Length: 326
Image 1 (cartoon, rainbow, N blue to C red):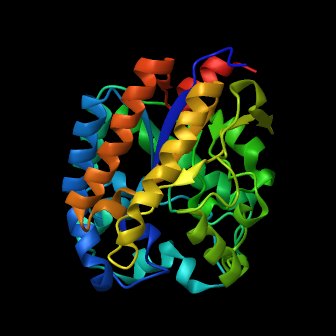
Image 2 (cartoon, one colour):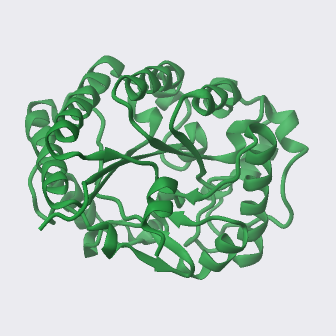
């Protein structure tokens, strides 16, 4: 029986090309990157319209206006990944000309910070990969310390939440985060197909199941009661419920199923007094903005209905942690 109103939380992994460099060329992702500023502004307008409290997990590199300024704020020591594709410090040092739209976003971050009910969280300073060979606790600590100092300096805010890049949750690093004042993290869905893994662990079978799970309920709603949220290493784990896949012409005929999947889980959370946690990357909406934003608004309209009917609330990750208080 429901004892408390359900909670709808959104977290966004704001990373631009820093989070895509090991996946696609900058030119190949140009449309998404160039469209991200307008997508962010439009999302913020929708969040204000529907009174959405969202958590923006921001890569620290984005706070700087250009490469030269960023180069003066690099932490020491730094990871040396076995796979050079993951080494964004090496990429930064070797590339003297970085397109600002693809790599930096201080004005957008300021806009986010000025919008009511938006939490500024971290996606680490350098899009740090916590499960890849070549990283360790010492370099992770330096990275997170630089992220917290940069956020404090640029926004006046203390980071309270983190989203691990590539969802590479590493329990060995939770004590470091707690010591830096971080109280909560976005965990992965509680199903083996969503377990954290390094890049080599992302097998074809897992990717296929995740894709199908977007449209058909293969693994459950992934909601949980606030009282069932667990602290791990001093941090509250607020697990993901669903990645909001962007519009795809290949799968567009299945968009109705995708929307129904999200709405059904949200409704379940509202009726049962549970948490539903939706996430995506702002750059996902950079291309096909109109279609993606229309889809998002349908979700937010459904949230408004659930709020009116069942008292569902929109909370940031930080707000959930303060309310749960366990």
